Image (cartoon, one colour):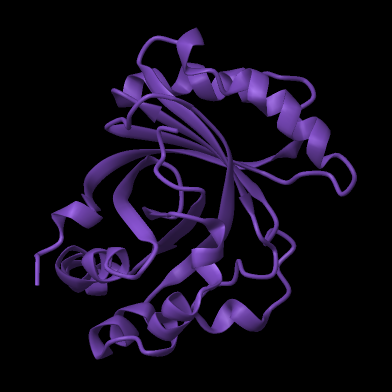
Length: 223
């Protein structure tokens, strides 16, 4: 599969301009490396919005879905660094999806990412997955490298902010990811879903993001 592993943590948030420089410094100098170092985490990617909200998006791949509810990960969540706590307190509009990767087609990762958030019907998950499998075909469009489907676990998908206790009807949403070579290649791939009569009513949001950087386990300093 073009995405390593079977699980993925998706986080997205806004941050006030007053705190933005420190937020980016923390992500780039501590947070991604710290998370990839956790047992079972394989890689992480950071994005900034070209057209979409929230402004920042990160994807963390794990060897299995169970890693995202493992003792190692729960320990990391319960023992955030002081730098992490200070930055998390400044998150706005946070989305946190703990997901299974159920479809992953193509080869490699792109410099641009299209993302479509869908809300599956209560009794139609299998039909929706089958319909998306037909649409998530990277060979059908120039400039598209790979395409993926993430299915959130509604119990584990909670933000780290004070909103975590609120009922979230979107906790079980799905995300279609479109890895592209360039931002200009994304709209045609998004349109395959947005123009589909059966799929369009299920779309919650869509966006286009530009890759900032990525890190894999092999990039970490050797102790």
